Length: 475
Image (cartoon, rainbow, N blue to C red):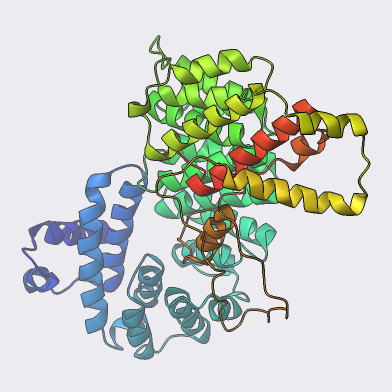
């Protein structure tokens, strides 16, 4: 009861503070660090549940807690709860300078000091050092309030190199701290990891749990990125019924956006059935409120059949789209789709006919060169894309990159330059990478010597290159 009263006083002081943490402490200097950190956690849990109005309160509480911990002395840290609060503060987005300085004044046990050192390395962007320090420490062996954050941090650090271990750690974080911001983050990261592991059952379960509990979190857009990418990557393992079950828990507006994004990605990847399903769901809407007039749904559903026998119908649908209602990237995609549709119905050139009649007279050794030349010709024949990156030289490798071979690399195409520029950009936290929009399986089933198949191959290459320039998600 005393702890709850103290927490209530901390939040009350926060609301009364006029401009600086000192104003609050002038009214009450008896708050312990663990009381302030617990108040911070309560606010963060409200944010995870969708209370966006609590975001400014979180910022103010972080400021107040930082000031209190900077002023803490060795006597404050004689209470183990205060030292654990210091570590939780650091893993809740705190200042690494404050954590390091406060830990240096504390007389804590060796394991707690090691955790502090690992947290500081993590906050300062030194993941290798953080992993080395924190890996031997079992989150289940420390108090739950600290163990939940420790499991979340370790799971994030090991996600790239040991994804199976990372998923176990994220499960431990959720077990130790259900219904909190820790669980929200752990579920969100589990969705992306399950997709990269090819675990469709785990992906579906984590997605269902996230939508049920944290759909309105301010970080839900990152879940949406992982969810769309996972649906595309696991399309052979996740049924349309399961996908519909998950999205049915969303509000109509979010469900529509999710289906539009899936339809776009699936169309460009050549997943016709998935694209048609997602487009139909986006157009269908709920409660009798359809979206048949949404130009994006028309565009994405047309992309999935742009090389089919119903090309005349597709061209007619593309012609009805109001360009003014599309984003810049989708307008360029519409131009590409219309160009591809025109290419499919264009008369077959005489040279192509003669080559088909002559049969495979050329040697197998010449085929790769022909394919590369065709790809280059396709790239040069693409319609202009506003805002696309111009052709650039290859980026300079960092000092620790493998040494380059003696032969100079060939100049990249526009699509290659865009992909290289994206790869060299700083990584964004919490944002999963987007798989390349390539369709090797679909292309392998087509005969390049058949005029119709050759046209389809060319159409798919054009769509792939356009998508590399535009990015994978609509604005």
